[in-house]
Length: 350
Image (cartoon, rainbow, N blue to C red; front, side):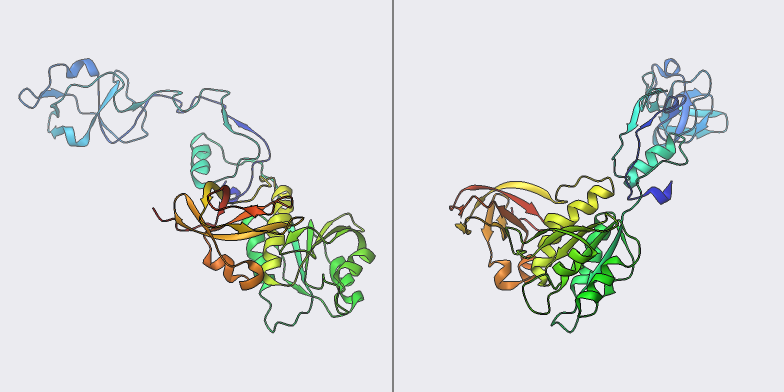
């Protein structure tokens, strides 16, 4: 069961018995019959039979409530009760969590720690989960001395429930890139860099030879040179630009959706979103979907920051989130309502 953590359920799970299977103590204390506590007070303590019980223990026959440890004084001959109890007080009744046949978790549910605990408590040892998609990352040579795109994409893939092998560095030729695309088995291939029109940019031509290049060039800024296709083995392949900001956003808008879908997760953007108003005008070129970084000075005000094109990944580092301006819009005027996608850990003033 522990190995299922962070995975997605492949099928629905139903209760096979009542949960809990019998009335049980909700806390540590002393099991008693409620009608035996009638009239108990600090001025009139009642001495009752001693039946110490721990949280989760089945209720002894003839008892229906639990005196908390702090309200019962244990003596050599029993327990002193100083407060009357109602029937069922501090008791989890049989089936109060789930009746037999009740749905415990739907297919597609992400196995978070609390759900693992609940299912183990329901008596399950193993559950069927969706296999993590294997993602191959191919990095083509670029001008940067240090590859930041490969580790960044690997972290994003792991966030989205995928697994990666070693990042594969391709040579500078078209044949070398094609060979890297075709090497090893994978559920999806990400090729980073070499997607532009330059003389040393071979990613698009290599994918066309290794399978099929369905799309090259999309109306996304940054990320215009992104490409989509598949290998001869019908494995999806996505070409991501070599510019770190464009690589990051093309992954988020396209590749991440594919990885999440392959792993049985919701393919939507993995960010919480909030409707806010623009603190200043957001300007965008019509005909392009543009990702605009924003800082949230207050819980309802989004201030646009310099674009990814101007400051690269620093735009993401300095931002609380981003706004997606659709291709049919020229932006948003000051005060307009917008949907802000908030980065994890973002601070919103209030």
